[in-house]
Image (cartoon, rainbow, N blue to C red; front, side):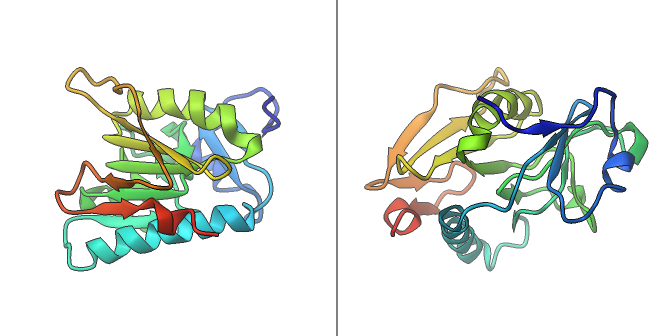
Amino acid sequence: MNPLAKKESCEYSYSDYLKWPAGERWELVQGVACNMGPAPSRRHQEISGELFYQIKGYLQNNKTCKVYDAPFDVRLSPKTKDEDIKTVVQPDLVVVCDLSKLDDRGCLGSPDLIIEIISPSTISWDYITKLSLYEKNKIKEYWIVHPVDKTVMVFKLEKNNKYSKPDIYTEENRIKVGLFTELEIDLKKVFAD
């Protein structure tokens, strides 16, 4: 089941995307527009907030990496003209360590870490479409957080530019973030009720 609404079948660009109503949540993948639906649930926001809090706290004195939460546009394209950019996503959390990729509209290029918190309407989107998209765009780490099961799947990009089999963590675990030597995410706090 994939209830994500799609715009009529034509190819869209970032310049089209910028003209759509501000109150709607859309993503573009290779020119196909998908409506992300209503605002996330309260539980989703609590999990996102705790993850952001732990990462932001660690990066507080770090001058080379930044963390952002949704809505935050990530334009996955080597092109810079709005009309040539065909893929724009709004991950729940993004860590960018190449600050030259940041501008006033978000990130142009691949961030280093993307975290998606799934909901019933986005399961196949996050597990299939985005997994493939993020691997293709060489995102170093991709996390899929499952609020109901209280699990996190962590995909890491290998030297062959393919994701390894995911490491799976439960609420009893701590996740050592691959990008940083000392950052561990405490999942008990992330999944606390």
